[in-house]
Image (cartoon, rainbow, N blue to C red; front, side, top):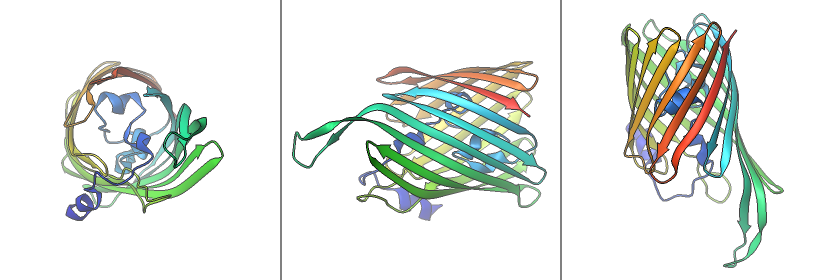
Length: 274
């Protein structure tokens, strides 16, 4: 843990692919970035959360800053292990390309960034689970295309049936381009389930920003799910609220994320259990 934190404890290097730090699905957004166990949404940021029975597909969309983030994914549970695959894309209609001379402007062009991921999770012992993800990232601006590989890993332990703790790091890679780095992120968290109430808290340290403490809670009543989250120490994001409805094999979720300077950011998700 100390080695991982020291590796990413740098807020001065050049960092790209910032959209990787922003969840797109409504459940994770409403919970301030926290993912519950057995959730397919874990394929992008916390692969150990995949482990669990059931198969599902999901789609999410979020308008963020000057562009939009969309994701599609699949999760399959096969007893002692689970698999997941997904694609996230961040599209910005116009980005200015500038030259080395001050004021030199090449033009304004659309930008497309993406993350294709494959994740696997499994039960290592009775109470210990592990997960690994492999990412293929790509970035295209005008006629410039760049791609690189990254990976992530996480462990989760159940000290009791109603409680879990986890440690993970994601988007681990060497530098690329002209000394750019990915927003490698380390997280340490815990959660509990008491009846229809779930509560989670985690400490998060991205490569290029300071530590934050995230907390999320979910309350369920029949088909309805109400969620809320808070981020302590985040530069711009304050908190979030969300609501979801589960009916037979379908789930529809919404979240509103409150920013200090940007107002409310909206996101929605649809999940189908197969």
